[in-house]
Length: 166
Image (tube, rainbow, N blue to C red; front, side, top):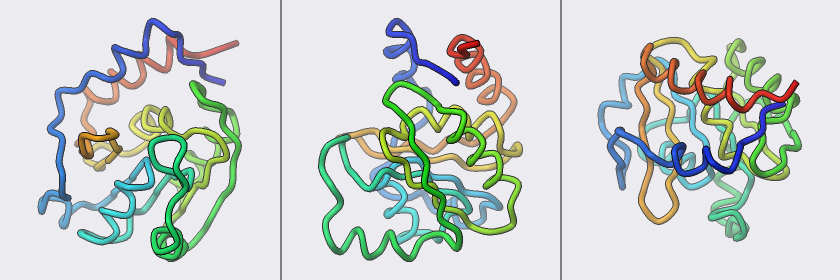
């Protein structure tokens, strides 16, 4: 299991990546897209295509359930659906294993988290192939598109190493 230490929270919020209001056209040619967060998943689905992997919790801004039309649209995303539990500030072993399985699958997968999915971004960046696009939401700001390269993997793995609980 991975546990976010309080002193790491602010550091994790920092990004050098651009924040988008709409999906950038450059995503159209992407071989692999992973989304973390409900609103950015819906945006990518509407504006680009179905992501190979999406991780959602059926809520926005931690507390507000998706509306009826958002839920209906979310039902159409992912050929395979996996349900996992994950407490806030953690990456559970089940969530980690589900991400690993989804990335190694040829089937588009939606992971629905009971709890919080935010930190799954680190696990996805750590596990996907170089060149993948990982998109996550920043509440009230937009979405961040991470072009996964060695530097991004190194950053994610550094956080994960500091979060690992024996």
